[in-house]
Amino acid sequence: MNSCARDEAPVALRVDQSAKAPGPASTDWTAYATAYDLLSEHNPAYQEILRDFEAFLATIEPPHRVWDIGGGTGNYSEILARTFPGSEIRFVEPDGGMIRRAQQKLSAFRNISFDSRALEEVDEPGTADLVVCVHALYAMPEQERRLADLHRLLRPGGLLYLVDLGRDMNVSDWRGYIFSHLKKKHGVLGALRIIWQGREIAKQNNAILKAQKSGVYWTHTEAEIASAATAAGFQIVRQEPVYRGYSDLLVCRA
Image 1 (tube, rainbow, N blue to C red):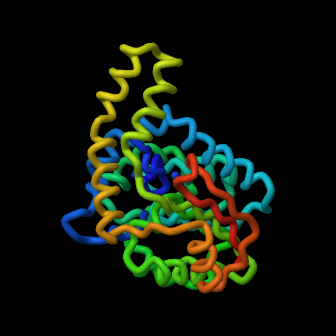
Image 2 (cartoon, helix red, strand yellow; image 1 turned 90 degrees about the vertical axis):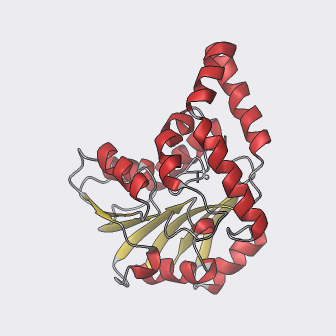
């Protein structure tokens, strides 16, 4: 939802995603990109994940190579590039609108390269010290196999920072949450103006919910995603619910 967008979370009113599942219920990620950063900036639950990511990076050694899978509009790669200016960051995002937005945002960084392939098309096994995948996996096809693809990218001992939307996207709940926060900060009129500017997010989050209900997008419990990660060969170092309980955060070791 990046504020769940790939790298992004469905901002709750897309989802810091690789190949999106096809079908009539699929989300228009290019449309999502136009308003994603506006709403994610005003979403406290999304900002909490960004802060957790920064805190996580402070605990690890500078990686030589990082893959940001389903990087969305580039929020997590921006933190990576700023924190580890000597690291090589591979940004993977197959949606044209998302990657264009990310290229604009990240143009000042010289340690980021951009790749529009889907995850399953990236054939560079054992090249990463760190893989980041935020609010992207749920929208990919054959998620269990994609977890194995994430594992394949890592060297032995490499780390995966994974956040995934697991529960149904309750658009009304998120709209109320965002509006309440905006009203305290900007007043009623200011809140209504921001909600209106980000109205495409609500439309696409409804599409996410339809895709979840139809089985196009993956939903899972905390136990189910832990089991899938373990089956893919990961050792889970840390796991907790995030994004107001809608998503799961896992730090895993290959």
